[in-house]
Image (tube, rainbow, N blue to C red; front, top):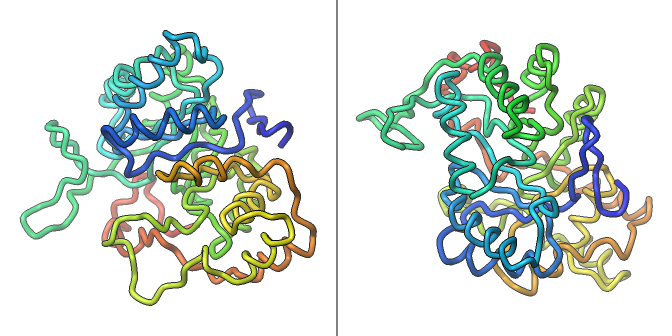
Length: 324
């Protein structure tokens, strides 16, 4: 990382901190995104399934038309949802995201996850049968990837990436790709540092990107487990932060950046939006990093194994679905 930027394997630059937008849609994102842009965020992380691409597009178009920013100032990342992994659906889905975002291209397009849901054709994001089970679909992600590569050639996408992929799935895509993935966005924080996955990805030139770097304190209630640890309340983070006059959140973000991990961080609190990007004026010591590493307990705030365990026999790349 240099000057707050990561150099991707294809030579393109990506701001090291992205403004995360999961669970922020409608008027709320119209209110929060300008605060983020004014605070200095230049990397926006969204997804088709977040239902906010249209609002983000409106805000960006306003900034562009007023001359506050140029399109090339913004690194815009979105994700291909798992109902659109069929090769006949990829281009239509990406075109729809571009239409919503009101741009001619996105800087990064990630496959949202390595499992597939049935595309009913009616916009249903989480199709379920009468018993409440997800309606799964078998896709071969190699076919999906080939379609994504065509969008790169067409100029609609500058870089391709993965999200929620384990090492087996990353390896499969990397070894068949003509346009290799530049990143893999996964849950990553002090409890779940993803050390082994990061080392594996680095060997393939894939940058690790972290979502939930603060333990996702604002996530949906159905994802909260009674009695689970609260990352931001760990005393060691407060202790380390006091040395630099920084918050526990800033310490967590800084620790990931120093490990060479891109960070996508979300807040809907104006003060925290500003604080979360104010992490380039201090550096953690080796001792600090060692103390933070002791927090590892491999706890997941997003237990996809529980949500999609029955998908193992239908893994999109025909390998056992295991998690990072």
